[in-house]
Amino acid sequence: MGLRIIGGELKGKKLYTKPGTLIRPTADRLRESIFNILSYQVKEAIVLDLFAGTGAFGIEALSRGAESAVFIDNNKTALSVVERNVQSCAVDNRSRIIRWNIVKNLNCIKSIGSTFDLVFMDPPYNKGLIKPSLINLHDSGSLGKEACIIVEHTPFEPVIGACKQFELTDQRKYGKKLISFMKNSG
Image 1 (tube, rainbow, N blue to C red):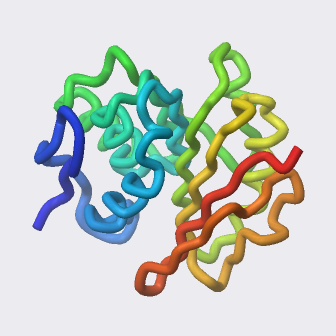
Image 2 (image 1 turned 120 degrees about the horizontal axis):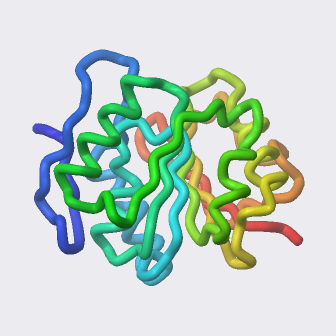
């Protein structure tokens, strides 16, 4: 069973991925659960897909009515997969793809000129990337007042206490993964 879009105008559209462990796309069922929780927050949202991988989160949001999406990853292979998926889904006019080291900083999004409503973050597991990424996200000043940050991670790398500027509003366990929903605490 391949990776596909599960809702909205692109429902059923297959997404390209690369075999192996370099890109670890979120399973369709898990993405569907996340988008069911988000429901009304997606329409007309400006989306940021960090550690984009295949771009499935951002493209799913666009399919469900998000206004635009920015995809960021530091891996050339992942970015070529995102680019291929964005083009095959014909959402390139509402997308921006950036190669950047998210852990170093997120200065690349300061110039975009809009604030993000939804942020999807699916970093490689157990590599210590959540805390610096959340801090850089906050420091970028690019979040909307009611922004929702969704982090996919393992229990071995908790988000609670990772960045005091964000508050955990919900957390769900799916198999061995945790999905944490966060918002600005100030």
